[in-house]
Image 1: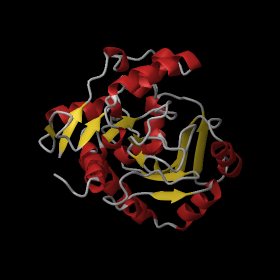
Image 2: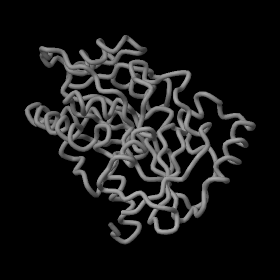
Image 3: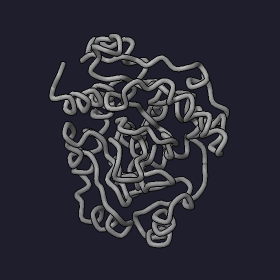
Image 4: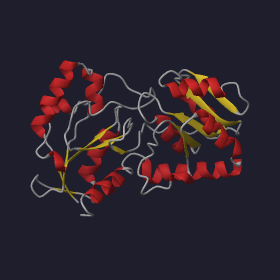
Length: 292
């Protein structure tokens, strides 16, 4: 497939951001990762704008938002800069990690979203730096666990009301540090992954990496690349915490262990940094009728 990388002013590709999230994450995300992949991939031929099948808009949306805010002035500036760059919105696509990206209207531009909140956009993984695994994994103690902010979405508040204090479930509010999060996740057969302010959760993909079955809870199933990945083999999606509890209480623990192992292999081979990008390209090929 032929792709033209649209030249953008340096201000649209900040080299760092003022605040990092999640807390243990490095200052790197899927927006930087996809650009790096295109520049080195054998699956893509970089060309000029006329012969290209697609134009890639390489804005670092998350870094822009963190550094500049999302006030009216910042959005006006962003819109003015981006409008100068896009040549043909019917052939343009971009990759956004931030929950509110792309912040401005982009016409017919195809938008890959890591935290989709509406019916528009193509889902991609919400990735963070991989966690370091302990030399010896702890024994399983909980059916499912959650450590994090319960206030970022009503479904999380409901989850704490319905499941906190119940036998087999461990729920703890707040940031207790990376080691605590990893330890409690590894002590669990499954990980409760409710959506937050965005439509997805870093926790879903962190759990896959750790070999623990993620249970996505929210109003939209934002698991990416459903045409290429059989998500039922490694995860669950439910709309409510009560449904999550019901599914897990019926599940065979040996099957949950097998799902967790498959999930870890899936993350390593298809969903970690650089690996996920080829599936985004498949989506673009489908939209262009299978062109190489």
